[in-house]
Amino acid sequence: MDYPTRFDVLVIGGGHAGTEAALAAARMGCQTLLLTHNVETLGQMSCNPAIGGIGKSHLVREVDALGGAMALATDQAGIQFRVLNSRKGPAVRATRAQADRILYKAAIRHILENQPNLSIFQQAVDDLIIEGDQVTGAVTQAGIRFYATSVVLTAGTFLGGLIHVGMNHYSGGRAGDPPAQALSHRLRERPFRIGRLKTGTPPRIDARSVDFSVMEAQPGDQPLPVMSFMGSVEQHPQQISCYITHTNERTHEIIRQNLDRSPMYSGVIEGIGPRYCPSIEDKIHRFADKSSHQVFIEPEGLTTHELYPNGISTSLPFDVQLDLVRSIRGLEQAHITRPGYAIEYDYFNPQDLKASLETKLIHNLFFAGQINGTTGYEEAAAQGLLAGTNAALRAQDKEAWSLRRDEAYLGVLVDDLITLGTSEPYRMFTSRAEYRLLLREDNADLRLTEQGRALGLVDDQRWAAFEKKREAIEAEKARFKATWIQPKSEAAQALAARLSQPLTREHSLEDLLRRPELEYADLAPWAAGEAVEDPAVQDQVQTQIKYAGYIERQALEIEKLRKEEQTRLPADLDYAQVDGLSNEIKNKLIQQHPETLGQARRIPGVTPAALSMLLIHLKKRS
Ligand code: FAD
Image: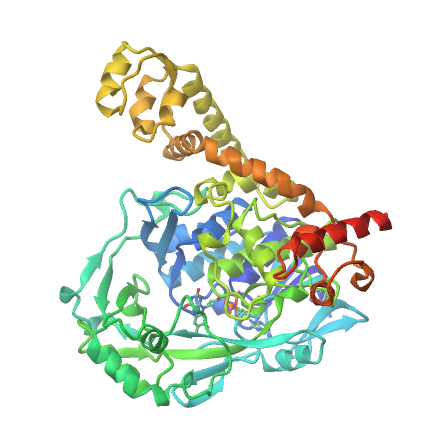
């Protein structure tokens, strides 16, 4: 056959994980094949068309800093941008964009189709080719065999996917798409630990049947935020508003009366759903004292009338969905265009993965996205980028790459998954990161672009822009350090009204910026030398100077932990032979086989004393 069937990296699945994985491997110079069910659904948003939000935007910016596509596509597709937590500290600020789902898909497809080294092929994968304990390729539904050094599996909610609407259920990968049954069966024959999770989505509504006049409009923020380091406001399409309405007692009554027809409450659904993104029936049940819940009415795009009512995800029967929707203010005449549903699917215990997202059981096979027990486009994209990069490194015979918890939310995400596992769909929150002040969405570029460049993920254009920004920040910080304000100077007098205490001695602008009452904009006009125009540079200088004390303290703490983090635990370590460990701890270590002492520390129940025993044992071995 003339068609190329041998690649460096094979990626299965063209969702958010698969696209970033394929792009990363191709950017690194590997001949890569993206195999997916349907080219038309590349980059499809299965649920609400929104990217970012709390904790998630940090991941999007990190993927972006490593050269990924998600933020670039969001800038081309975002129709309402907001900065959440804008009144809180920079560590928890988060950008969120409502996206036009058609524009988003088009942007992702454009990026994929124009990526050198990347081929796309439409076919369902029915099996992996495994020789001994090593994957060597995949077989498609039509029996076509593709071979590669490494394979990344990103099948999302499709493995054994089962869709529920009321007491009816049928197989599906998500509404309108087939499930991956054959692959699910084949993978179940392997020694993976496989479980079931579930997620759900609300019914969609035709905007022409909605009374927006009784709802609260929620326009985007001004100035308009931008998601990608390389993006600009000029790329954004037309901006429109979202709307807010609420459920009420009647809505809740309709749901209560029909809970026996809910697949979740009648025991039909076995999988556990996302605690932080509950269905409306879950909310009514769990927060029984609340008489109302917010519903965000979000447009699905500029060229469609479909709306996404965020907050009423449900798998109740269709007649109940219709009643509950029509009980909500502004939706009394609503026409539903698609019913809401829940989907159950297979996921793999992520404790069977290494920090590179390679499976511990089959060499050269990497897992990323929803199949690792996560939920969310951003979580999937971030894992995809990491898995794709490591698949490429393996193909190039290079060492694996991972990020530490103090370097990135991506490091937190992967470390949480592989050390703690998950029994419910895992989503990112800022509260999951212990070094929040270091891991801000605004400094993802400064944290990661250099690593991305070294790996071959970051192109010349991004690198040049990054170096320019980094130099500008350093120069501006130096300008603030070198400019001194005398107590009786014109500057001191101009600032007097803003100061909580008058100046009694000379201060540098750097000193003054540390005061809570002063902002960069108050001080910059008094700095000697050329002014800086770029707001991203100004923000960075302000945050770095204002929070320098806290940032240094976190950095010291990290330094202390780093040694432990880097102490590797050999794969052949026989925990049964380690003196002084309880049987319970031995079992946990045998089961999870942590790669480093740091990972061992984070396994619940592993005590500091047990870590000391491990260290002593390691010293004896060496
Ligand atoms: P997916 O986006 O599912 O992509 C998987 C891709 O793999 C698809 O392109 C598919 O065609 C392809 N594929 C699968 N099997 C094969 C095969 N055998 N051969 C070839 N190609 C294959 N996230 C949230 O954050 N909040 C929510 O409220 C939320 N609700 C959701 C509701 C529903 C109903 C669904 C389906 C998903 C929801 N999600 C939600 C999850 C979100 O859609 C996923 O987290 C995200 O899409 C995962 O990305 P992924 O790349 O892992 O998988």
